[in-house]
Length: 526
Ligand SMILES: O=C(O)CCC(=O)C(=O)O
Ligand SMILES: [Fe+2]
Image 1 (spheres, helix red, strand yellow):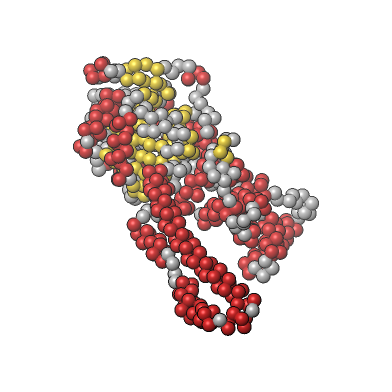
Image 2: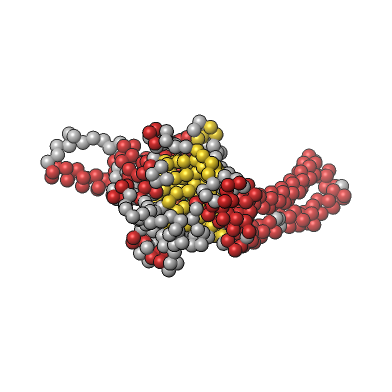
């Protein structure tokens, strides 16, 4: 699960540095050996040429006779030994021992990193060819990908049963192959995946022609031979069904792979309208209507806290109903560094609660690493809690510990509510603290590209800025969940994203945020 946080990925670079040094030493040892052998070739050849010029004259000299004999006995033994000697063995052994001491990514990490890339591709509308060229929004984003790299991305998608991305990346691999001098993949391998995934996408005709192309390259390719027969049979079946249905075939439109693929685009895990809004918000293409934005203000606030009277906080309104605000400069760089330091060694992949079983589990819709920090651990953590109390006017007696989160490549958290809904109520039952009444979300880093917190229902995106914090109530005054607070963390496109959550609970807030006597108008809508 290294791919889930950038903090862990840094260690992989250290691993790589060690491997490179070791490989370099191994190559040097090999070169040394080859150089010695080459030297011997020269020596032998020189003497041999000399002898060949006049064999009898050469051998009539007793010194030469002795030298020839010596060359083929003791000298040759040395050469033989040198040839047989496996140099650099220790470096080879190092490689094995590194496995247990250094951090290595697993196959799951490779898969996770590939999936993350696809997620970025989908969310930010990145086209495959540009991404493969290492371009993003017209600027160089990364190294160019080889056909082999694209092939691997396709293969990983294939392993996940994601034929949509398999086709995209295998096609790209094919395109890249044509211009590669030192080929990093074979046309046969690419065609095999491409044909099968195209078939899985429902396009049998194209799958068949791709398979035929493959058979031209490798006529006795076993799987291709049987697939071809299978596709032909399927096509025949289709044609027969058409006749039975009375289609005369004249309306038959050749199926274009691209349109087919478009239609089968990514599986919809939730409401497609929300998904669309979510992605648009992530790309910065949506914002609340001007009528709302024109009402928003910035102000200093002391929140009736005597302490804040001396140093009021800078508050920026982001939305009115529900009321969502941003506090500026509420966490210093020093505090941020300290919190990161505490969190790093304790990072675990973030989990979500299965509301049926109550179990905590991993989910692809939440990819990050997180750690919990207790007030009791450090004066600084306590200070942060007190600051949250001042910012919100709510008691921290029943709040959760500070949750520190780091998102890696493509790290994200899809739309969710922070509060527990009726069916999830047992989530907090044992605590006796009630539901999560409010959220304070501290941004502990800037994010170069991507990583916004978005509220699809509100058309609102909050862009991370180091040292700021967002605050909103998850519950109406009645205690019912405010469904308009549904929000998400967009995938990180470039850079890294650090946040920390302080979830505040209902108990203890009775006099600080009294229950409403009536339902809000907006509550009735849900
Ligand atoms: O990281 C973000 O922007 C939001 C995180 C979030 O919503 C959560 O952890 O519940
Ligand atoms: Fe959240």
